Structure formats: structure tokens, C-alpha cells
Amino acid sequence: MPKYSFTILGKPFCSKKAITSRCRLIRDNYEYGQFLNVSDTAFILECVNVFCPKDKSYLINNIAKIFVDKAPQKLENGYLYHKDTKCFYAILKGNEMKDDFGLFQWIDKYNRDTRMCDIHEAARNAIKNTVISVIKDIKFPHKSEMPNSNVVIQSRDDAHVDHYDKDFSEVLADWIEQKGGIDVVYKKVKPTEPNSSDCEFIEDSTKNDFDSFCSQNSHLRIISKKENLTRPKVKIKDNILSFPPYKCFRTFAV
Image 1 (tube, rainbow, N blue to C red):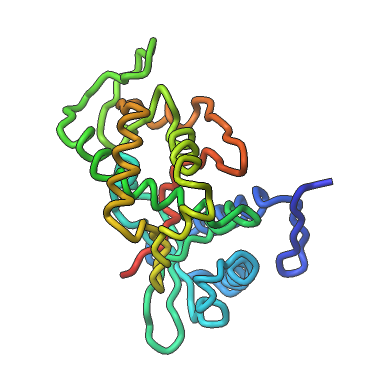
Image 2: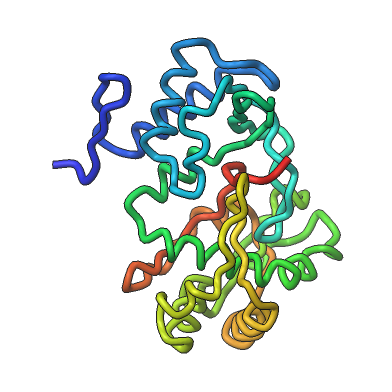
């Protein structure tokens, strides 16, 4: 029996992965700037209705058109989103406002503890400057710093900044436990702004505290994108999971 089952426009899907595959197929079938046809628009709109989080509920019944375009260029986890990566954009009714909604991320997060997802995002943002400082002066080609690796990283687009000794999720789990648990830490997360899914801690002192804790309990190294995405990830108890780095499914204000 599948853990999740869904019906989208009358068609059954046995898993979130199956829906993600269909959405990705639709996305990749369009060129940059091209609007979805009627049937594809209907499918994506139904997915929005099913998976849209509460803070993005204004999108429901408020999307006039959907198109595909280049994902935003943004440094995250030590690398740039590839400029040729596609993502969905919505044109909202009435004001022609453009919103690159994070459908794939919503599907992935569905039925997870969204508090932990927000804490994870806020923690990533808290160490962003530290991560950038590690990679900004690296000259490419650069040999991967993964032990016993013979990989030579050719460009920054193929470089990831990786936590070792302890995975990022392990460090985050330890920090959350030290601070009193998920409920306590979640109160330190700033409410998401409208038209954005960026999460940050409210106080700079919290950001600095986690950044310092992370530096004391883990180390950073430059490895290839493939090495980072294929190496085993540590699973953390109490629903504190090792999330993959999302490339293009963040929502941001435009």
C-alpha cells in the first residue's frame, strides 16, 4: 500500500514522486517564456490546490496564467543555481504580478513537519555568508576535497560546499536539542513574507549563535556537485531529516 495516494484531475497517482515526474515533464516541454497550454495549466493548477502551503494560499484561485522561465540566479549552499534551469512562474489575476511558485518543494514537503522545514531553511540562511566565504576565492579547476577522490571540479557551477565530520543536519539536530527542542526554536523563525518562502531567524543573535555552533561542530570542504548529491546522508531521529539542496524551487519576490 503506497504511503501517499492522490488524484489529480481524475487521474490516480500512487506517490509524490509520480506527481513530481509529471510536473517536471510538463515544465521541460516548454521553452523559456512560453505559457502552458490549457491542459497542462489545469494540471499544474490542481497541484497548486493540493500542495500549496498555508502561507501561499493566496495563489489558490488567483492564478491567471502559468509560464516557464529561467530559475533565479541565487547563491545557496555555496553554489549558483544554473541559469539554464527552468521553473514555473504564475501571473496573478488583476495585477499581472509574477510569482515563481515552489511547486516541487511543496510536493516534497507535503505531510512533513513544516516547522522543521522552516527551521532548516533559516539555519541554511544563517550560515550563508560563511559558506560564501569558503568558495568565493577558490580558483577553478579545483581538486575535490573529498577523501580519496580523483575528481577535478571544472567550475563554480559544479562545486558544492559540504559539511563533514558532522553533516549539516546532524549539527542542526544537536543545536535544536541544546536550545530546547523544535517548538522553542521555531518561535525564533521569522514569519514568511507574502510572495516569499525564504525563512530566516528573527534575531541576528540567533543567526550568529547557530553559525558559531556550526563552525565549532563541523567543517567545510569543496566537493563536486555529483559527489555531494550521491554520497550517503545521515538520517536524524525525531523527524529532523537530511534535506537535499533545492536548485530552482525556491519562491522569491520579483
